[in-house]
Amino acid sequence: MNNAFALLKTVLLITGYLLMSASLTVAQPLSPEAEVPCDTAVSSNIPLNPAGNEAAVCTQRTYQLPATDTLALRQENYDTIEVEAWDGTTIRVEAVVVARRATDEAAQSDVARITLNRADAGAASTRLFAAGPDSDAPGWWSIRYRLRVPAQTTLDISSKNGGIAVRDVVGAHQLRSENGSLTYRLPTDAGARLRAETENGIIETTFPVTTQGTVSTRYLEIVVGEGGPESLLTTRNGNVTIQRTD
Image (tube, rainbow, N blue to C red; front, side, top):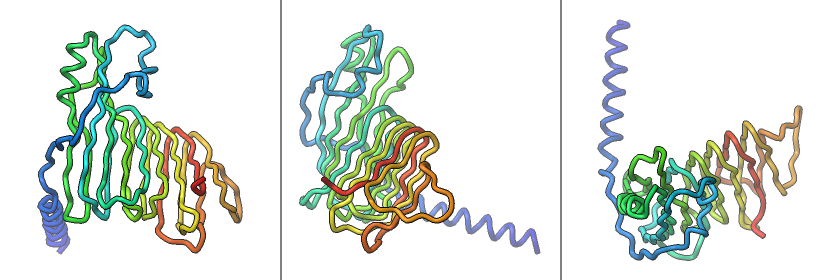
């Protein structure tokens, strides 16, 4: 009986995995609608090279995507992610791509190999991630993102080394950073349920907070306005700031 149950469980797990895999389209590199050189001084990456003995190449690419209910973005390298609501009916991505190597030629070659890729999980969800050359010393690359999305887009964003800032986007979000601060600004009339956590940092909010029991600056649950979608904001090394839009 136990063996039969174990076999059935295994079959169900495999079936679920296959169904999930079938719903994901093959990741495809996106073609930017525009690309222009940018000043390396505007990239927050530049101070990460204290020796100053490397060459840098910086380019800004703009992408336009159909809007979806859920937008996922993974940042595996350095730099920040900014997301803001707009009145447009599409998703606009501005990506500042920086590569640093020993020579201009090597840095330019790395930039040409860096792509922004898209994979959809059904018609209602889009996943974005970057791919490029190995970034071990003596060179590395990264992308700073600035996104414009419809106000009701649900966000699933994670960053390995960089902060995340979201403004006026209302939904059941998941914002996670390993090494970076999180800033979440809500429209004046929006309602939400928020859970914020940090291991090495503090949580700050301009909203009134009613507490029971122990007060912690590293964990906070609050209801904003009349309540609404529940969002999770977590970082390991960084602060979490929650406030109304100025």
